[in-house]
Image (cartoon, rainbow, N blue to C red; front, side, top):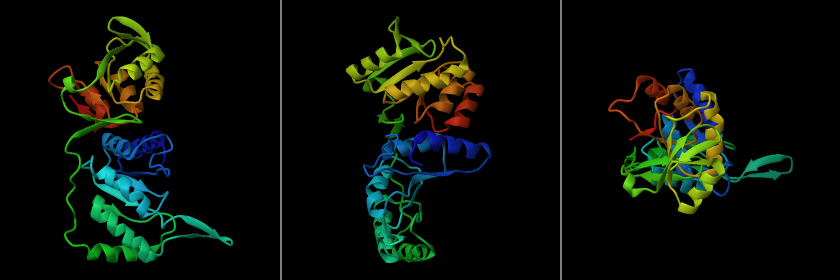
Length: 287
């Protein structure tokens, strides 16, 4: 899938049926999804969703996807999966053919395996059982498999368009404390502010993270969906959230795109809030 919103909806639907999920995204030629997510944001989002494995498929051949999966491997400990096309399609007469032979495809996959260390490999458009057979031979010829997963030493948080390395120390980050009253009105430093003004201030101050407090929320819990979607439309950066209303926080975790922070106010997270996190974003970073 080439849109994080569609990807999240599909993962949540599968998990609601008690299925274990492996999820992959498709990028454009610039290495971003259609909705503007980088490889780092994609894999952070999949971590947040709690999938078993994540990665890339379709779109291009192995050589084009190799640098993108390598970037993912440097920021995650999640098992990676990749299923490229057999190169790029070409129309010859009335037929659509792909540029890579079985052996060329397998040789390019060797480089991906050695550099990005995926746990699961395969092929998408243009491949067939003969490509899989050639790939199997290449895998058998690579010594010291499986390679260890080395990424994810630090904690990555993200929204739909930008990732931030979370250090665990607020003094090391640029942030704003914001109280959300309803879908249109918030409070910053005891001053009422609307969404547009907030996003302009965020850009001016080069804020990394918005710390969102829902304890003063006055609107219906169902309105959280529109609020989060509008906020993420204007602000490109991770959100940190806190609050005590499970219904309001359920809306946040369900519709937030990315991997957020949750700031607990007590030693233990309340049971109903933990259920919200486990259902929608089990990979949420707790602080």
